[in-house]
Image 1 (spheres, helix red, strand yellow):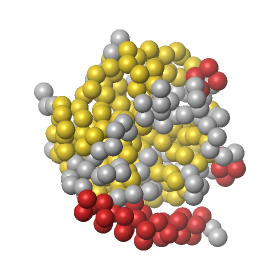
Image 2 (cartoon, helix red, strand yellow; image 1 turned 90 degrees about the vertical axis):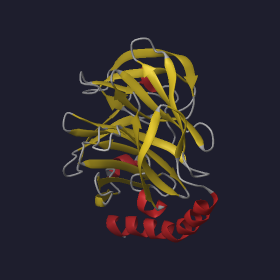
Image 3 (cartoon, one colour; image 1 turned 90 degrees about the horizontal axis):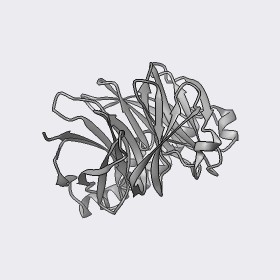
Image 4 (cartoon, one colour; image 1 turned 180 degrees about the vertical axis):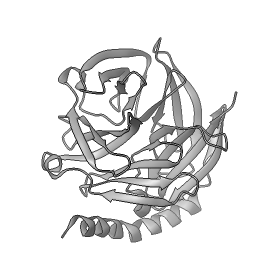
Amino acid sequence: MDIAKTAAWIRRALSGLFAVLMAIGSSLSGEPYIASGDAELKRSLLYSYAEGVSFMQGIACDGDVYYGFGANKFLNYNAITKIDVQTGKIIERREMCLPKELMRKGYSHLGDGCLHDGKLYIALEDFGFRHPGVITYDPETLEYLDFKTVPDAARGNGRIPWCEIDENGVLYFTQSNDVKELRMLRASDLSFLGTIPLDRTLYKVQGGELLNGRMILVTNEGRREKNIYSVDLATGHVEILFVRCTGKLDAEGEGIAVCPAADGSVLHILDAGKCGVRIGSYALKP
């Protein structure tokens, strides 16, 4: 079975089961909303799990296109997907996008990522969480470019759910649980640059993106209500930016992209679960 047929079979296998779960979930839970904080939900794009599995883990945006990163490690499935920002329509999928040599080494889980210097940088974990790394792709062709592992000094528990890069080429990431610091690498070679200690321990961190000198972190804390945190890079001070209700009983908070849109939204956040995959666009009030 070739790659295209394998990927299509996986999505077909998921389609029937999750269509039923999505219908049940929709009847049990309403639309997402802001539970507290100075934010406003401007737009919500909802996809079935079978559609969204190809971009349910992470997201980046260039203003015109969402680049979504998807994975189901138990089915050894991975993908990068282009989505039109204006219409929400899927433009292109590159399924089973990981090189075979990396998949043979146990790599399967794409996380959240970002655009930097004309490349897509995406967090990548192996099944045993032994050698986390960052993989790069060409955003135009979605062709694989390179992969590097995180150095042992920065590896922590082997988790790398997200990565973000600033204008100086510094790559930031955290592990997912027991998060006490932001870790910094040089994006060009992933050499370890140091850490920013946090004044609060965070849990279930899934995505991160820079906004006005602060790191905005998406977490999967709680059941329906999820905290969005803001971290001051100069001091490591952590604040709750806002709390959102996902509107789905079993949805997980996933990746985040920072990209100003015409409707005033600036944060584009992924939620994913058995009931579907959602891209929510949020504006921040002055």
